[in-house]
Every structure is written in C-alpha cells, then in structure tokens.
Amino acid sequence: MKKINIAIDGFSACGKSTTAKRVATALGYVYIDSGAMYRAVTLYLLDKEVDVLNQKKVVEHLDDIEIDFNLNKNSNVCETYLNGVNVEDKIRTFRVASKVSYVSTFKEVREKLVAWQRQMSLKKGVVMDGRDIGTVVLPHADIKFFMTADIEVRSERRKIELERSGKKLSLEEIKTNLQERDRIDTTRSESPLRKAAEAIEIDTTHLTFDQQVQKVIDLAEGLIHED
Ligand code: CDP
Image 1: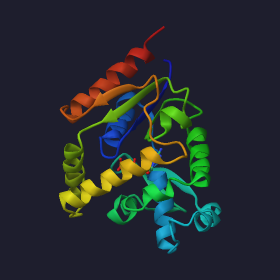
Image 2: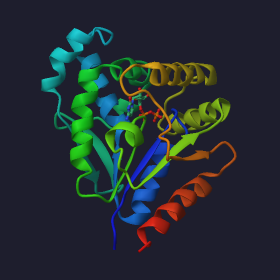
Image 3: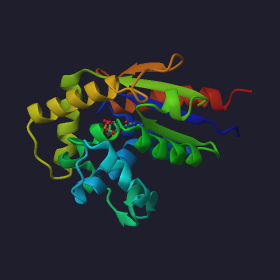
Image 4: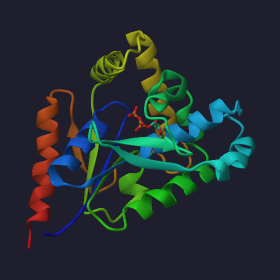
C-alpha cells in the first residue's frame, strides 16, 4: 500500500498533537512532534541558565543538544529524550511553554531541527505536526492540514490537559500564554506560522475530538487508496 506524509500545522492548543498521534496510530504511521523538539531545546537552555533571548548565547549551545524519540512500551507512546534523558513531562511545563516561542524564532535553532525533521520523514509514513511543516519542513507532503479553534475553547482544552498531569494554572494565565505564542509564531521572520496554500483548514471549535481525528483519517485514507 502507498505510504504518504501528512503535515498538520496550526495555532497552539488546537488539538494538533493529540490528533496527529491518533491518526498515526490508526494508519500505522510514525508520529513526529516537532514542537517537542523546540520545547526540548528550550528546556536544555533553561536548565543551563542561558538567557533564551540572547541569540548568540543560544547558538553556542546547539551542538551540545541531541534529541530522540523513543517508544514507551507500557503506554505505546513515543516520548522525548534530551541527551539520552526522558524529558517528556518536563517539556510540557509552563516554565518551558512561556519561553519556547522566543527560542524558536532563531534561524540556527530552526535549521538544526528542520534538518532532523526532514531526515526522519525520508521513508514516508509520517504524521508531523507543528507550525511550518506544510510550508517549510515538508513542502511536498502528500496532504496538509491547518487547524484553528476559538481562543476560549483552546484555553479550556489546555487547562484540562495540564490538570490531567497535575499542573494547576488559571484560565487567564493559559490564555495569555497561548495568545503570546500565537503572536510570536505568526510574526517572526524565520518561517512564521502560515497556512500552506493547499492545506485543508479544520476549525475544531465545534468538533469533538473523535470528529476531528476521523476527518483527517478519512481524507488521508482517500489518498492512500487512490490509484
Ligand atoms: O502543543 P502546543 O500547540 O502548545 O505547542 P507545540 O506544538 O508543542 O509547540 C511549542 C512552540 O514551539 C510553538 O509555540 C512554536 O513557538 C514552536 N514551534 C515552531 O516554531 N515550529 C514548529 N514546527 C513547532 C513548534
């Protein structure tokens, strides 16, 4: 059967990662969380007490950073490793979320991560989510999606997600962070968040999670089974 690459871009907390993960499982594909890579770089810098707004200082550390994804055999979920250490929980904290969009504006950071992301997609059968997947990382992806959702709905969803992993933040704090990241991600000069011309837009505001997943699977399967 033909294997395709699927790109999913969109604003923070639209359900991209959860959708991408489910779609990958349903199709037997590999899920690549590009945001986790930017988060892992940010975690490394924060732990080393590097000023994340200082491009020169950030770039000096890039050669010391290795990121991998390894399957957790108990949960059957791929987890993020930074220099050999599992950082899956640490990269999802507010400490990292509040700084990651500054780090991801830097050209050198993007070049390093984009090269890895392309390398991982060579064999096809990949679902990758992020901000620049359809526009820059995989411009020849077989199918591209662009997810949006109302900011109030996104903030609520992220709050529930954080609470599930024991992190309590106010709705206002979460909303401010999402809006700030959207602003930085769409206005940066290096590969800003944009809808690729041929991307299929999915507004998830009024969709259940199962509906949004099914929509992506149906469209992808249409392509996979096409002659
Ligand atoms: O899950 P959430 O939508 O909150 O964000 P994420 O996908 O984990 O990405 C975290 C941050 O990394 C984004 O706000 C972007 O600043 C950056 N990012 C990026 O610049 N390019 C990507 N391909 C993926 C993430």
